[in-house]
Structures are given as C-alpha cells and as structure tokens.
Length: 296
Length: 296
Image (cartoon, rainbow over the protein chains, first blue to last red):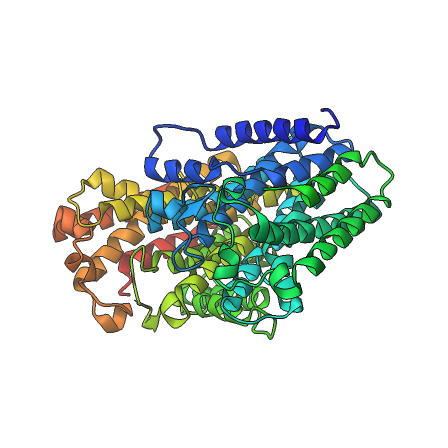
C-alpha cells in the first residue's frame, strides 16, 4: 500500500466496504427488513475513518492487512450502531444524515433500535471469530474496544453527558469530558487496536494513545469549526445547526480565533507524540495534517 | 453445592447478584443516572434463570464456580439489555415489569436505550477479561453468545419476527421461529456456555443443545399457559395480557389441552436428551421438572 493518504484512504475504504459486505451480505435471509436496515446504515457513505486509523497504525507496526480487517470492520460497526441510536427521536432526533434519511426514518424506530443492537453484537462476534489473530489478541481487542464503547469512560457515557448538556451553558471541562468519551475513546481504541495487532511495545502503545487522543480532539474542533464556516453541500448536513440548537462547541465556547489556535496546537501535539515511535509514521502524520485541513 | 434445586437456585442467584454488583457497583462515578438505570434493570428481581443454567451445566461437567460466574453474569446482562429495549415505547411499550416501572418509565427513553447498549457492551467485556478462562475459551464463549444474541439466528431476529407478528394470525411454524430466536437461542447458549467451560465433548455439547432447546420451548409453553391460568400476584404482571393484545401463544394457537400435552411432551424430550450424557445430570433433570411445574 502506497504512503499517499488519498490512495490509502480510498483503498482502505474499499477493503472495509468489501469486508462489511461479506459480514452483512445482501440476501434473502430473514429477517430481511433488519438486514436491510443494517445495510442502509452501514453503507450510508461513512468515511471509514476509524478503520483507516486501525489499518494505518497496524501498517506502521508492520502488520499485514488480513490481520487488521476484521477489527477495522468491527470498529465501523460499533461506530454505525452508535449513529443509528444517537439519531433516534428519544436522543438527538435527527432525520437526515449524510444527505439520506436516518435508519428510523427510512425503516421505523423499533427496527433502528434492533439494527443498532445487532451491529454491536456482530462487531464483537467478528473479532471473537477472526482466525487471523491469536485468541489472546482477540480478547485484548474486545476488552479494549468494549471499554471505549461503554461506560464510564467510553462512548455511551459520552452520549449521556452530551444529552444532559443540551440547552445548558457548559464549561470547557464539560465539553472535553463529552468529546473524550463520545468520540475520543473509540478513536483511541481504533489506533490502539492497530498497535495491539502489530505487537507494539508498551511505550509505543502509550505514544499511539496520545497521538490518537489529540487526533480525536483535533477532529472535533475542526468539526465544530466547519459547522460555523462550511456549506451544506460540503458537509452533507445543515451548517449552523449546532449553533441554532445551542449545542456546546469549541467556537461557541472559546470564540472562533481561539478555537482555530486550539486546532493548530492540538495538531502539533499529535505530531509530537509520533516522534516517540521509531517506525515509519509518515502516514499517521499525513492523517493528522488531513484532519487539520479538511473542508468537509 | 448441594444437588437440591431450591438451594441451588438460591445460591447461584446470590452469587450472580454479587458478581453483577461488583461489575456495576453502586457508586459516585459519573454518569450516575446511567449507572442507576443499569442497576435498576439488573436488580429488578429477575430469576437469574440463564446464569443458573450455565452454572448447573458447568457443575455437571465438573467446572468450578469461579470459571462460570463471569459468563453467567454476562448472560444475565444480555438478557437484561434485551428486556430494557423490548419494553421501549417503539417496541412492546411496557411500563411495568415484575411489578416495577420499566427502565424508560423510571428514567427516560434515551437513558433506557443507552443503559441497554452499555449492558451489552459490558457483557462481552466481562467475558473477554475473565482471567479464570483461557483466551481460547473466552473467544469461543463470545462467539457462541453473540450468535445467540444477534441476527439471523438469535434474539434480535426473534424480536423482529415477534414485532412483525403482532396483531396478525400466525402459524405454529411462525410461533416456533419467534421463540427459537427470541428466547430459545440464548437459553441454548447459556447451557452450552457451561458445557464449553466444562470442556464437554462434541457429543455431549450436542446433547446439551437438544436439552436446552427443549427446555427453552418448555419454558415458553408454560409461560403462555400461566398467562391464561395465573393470577397477577403470582406473575408480577397482568394475566391475560397476551390474549387481549392478540399475541400469538401456544394456548391461543393449539387450545389449552393440546398446549398442555405439548408441554408434557417437550419435558419428556428434555429428559431424553440428558440420557446421552454420562455425567451427574440430576440437577439438569430437576430444572426441567421445575419449569414444567412452575406456577409463576
């Protein structure tokens, strides 16, 4: 695989899509509507960022793609389940995502809840059954990803904090706590998963964790900035939505200029963490650059 | 542990409750409302039938309790998550379970969805991190339980079929398909988990699967019969509810007498399967007897 980010992202996205297609095939197997709802959400045009990160880190530690692909797909399934549930009327009540009706709008609420549940189950099943990895590696990965997806330090806890914060004035600390859990934990887990498969040392794992934590923060700050400055066509969603719903964001909390400075600082910390790793980290650096400069 | 069913059920229930209490402790850890919602649902007075079955089968194959307890607790967490989600307004819309407000009524819908999600995550995490088992056994258990909890052959698929059947005339075949997935698959997984930990042979595992499949069916037929004949005090729910909501049940489909005969037949198949196993199966036989004769 070339160390050229655009190619890399296109190739990994293709590989992950193929893997997901094999895991949840288009088929006549009942219940068809559930299968259709799962596929609707899985193939709704996600960027496959978490899988790409797993594969990029795995590559950096010399792991072949076949050892990474199941875990990468599992991470995307957990990410997708979280989006399906977050979009539900009882949660963020979103009817459009990436320009398409969300799962509960296209199907119905019960089906969306169950599609999310099944995606989570299949994610752990996929890792547990991945014969390219030793059982020891598989249980390490499941533990790592479950902690990042659950509570109190993971994604579900983050969504609870996020819902509790809606319509309220919150502090920078509160905002950090939300993002560290809601998106940060799974991004760290995605990066660490690649390093675990690649048999990284403890020191390397720590550096990867810092890199990924900063990358997750950078992703969020840039996301918030794009909501202020982006266009609907670029974003695939309505810009300014966060501001109108009084959602806490970095620009809302710190102002535009300080938020932009914070993005640049976070990017520097990201790159600094990589200097601890004596491996070909070029691709990981490019990912950080890409996230800083992305327009959508 | 004594081979006396009442004592056995009381002891295992106590052990499982202690384990669950350690896994989800009462604590000041944020998010407190999520933790409270999880505990509300976990400690709502469940009979701990699936964990008891795992432990009973494990005992039969000579496995010590400490090798069984995490998996037993994980099965109860998955069972509990499924109840929390099934009770949601978009699904069965139940506001009372075991005489208490359901999770989304006591808390709110978003919290109930997330409590269910977190319980599923913690279930797989708990098995992945159980150091009393080899990694190889852990991944076998996770695979087994995930297949039983997911789709197309597991619990989530069963709930989809069940929702689709509501208010419709369905056949005996359809009813069987619902129950085999919605409750049967996890009961089989619970029994097989005990046998896997106990290093049962393939032949023994097959016999245990047949025993558990018949046990699950028996459980359901008796449940349906109790809904016709039971009192609210015994059941902790309103009797006759299934009939009023035109839910497909064995008595509704076959008539009371044939449903009672079917229960007796199923019980015999259950016992017959045990004759294939050259181990102390007395407790497993007692469980089958108990389910046939239970009044609540």
